[in-house]
Image 1 (cartoon, rainbow, N blue to C red):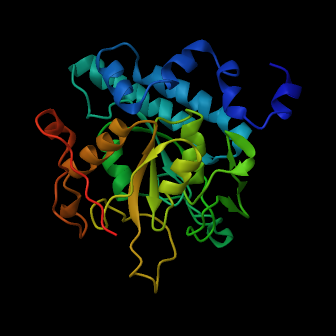
Image 2: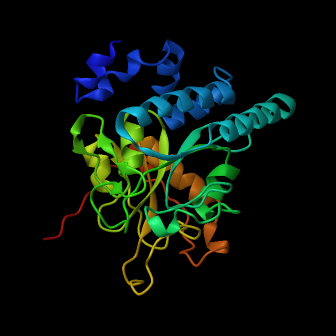
Length: 294
C-alpha cells in the first residue's frame, strides 16, 4: 500500500487489513468470546493471539492516536505463562484465558503510569497495583497490553488532552471518536482490541460505541467495581460513575459482566451483592418484554 493512499483517505478502517499479515487479520476478526473458545480448543495459542492484537494495535495507534501506553513485552510474557499453564496442567486459568483486553487510561494497571489526561499527573510514579476490575480480568486469564486515550476531566464527549492529543474516528478521521472512552472505541473499531474496559457517567461508553459502530454497556451504579481508577470526583460524589465494557459483540458484553460479577467484587468493595443474571437463557422458552415509560 502506498503512503500517499494512506495520507489521502479519511476512512482508515478500510486500510487496516492491507497493513498487517493475513494471520493477524484472521485472529483479530474474532470476538472475545470466539477467541476464548479458539484458545481452549488449541486452534491458537495465547502468544499467537497476543502478538496479533499487539501488531494491529500498533498500526491503529499510528492511524488514529488511540493509545497512551503500550506494554507489549509484558503481554507476550503473560501469554507465554498462560500457554505454559495450559500445556502442563490441561486447565485454563479462567474464562478469559489468553484473551487480550485493553484498558482506558484512568484505570490503574500495575507497572504502568496513569494520567487520566491531566498534565499534573504526568510525572506521577507508575502504579504498584491493578485497579479492582483490572485485577479481576487478569485473574480470569485476560492478557493486558495497552492503555487507551481519554480526555482531561473525563466528562467530555470527545477524546483530547494536552498530553496525548486527539483520538480520531477510524471511519472518518476528519471526525472525533467520541468520549470519554474514545480511545477504547477507536481501537476496538479497528480490531486492535476485542474487549475494552471503559467507564460512563453521562455517555462515556455509549457515545463512543455509537460513534464507532460498536456495542457498549453502562451497568447500574454500584454493580461493577471502580476502586483503583484516577479521576477528580471529590465534591461530586452524587454523580455516580460506573465501569463497563465496549466490544464488537453483545456476547462479549455479557462475558465481561459474567466474569466480573462471578468474582463477587462486593466482598472487597461496597457494591450490591447481586450476581449477573443472563436474560438470554430465558428467551428459549418465553418472549422478551420491553417496557417504555414516557
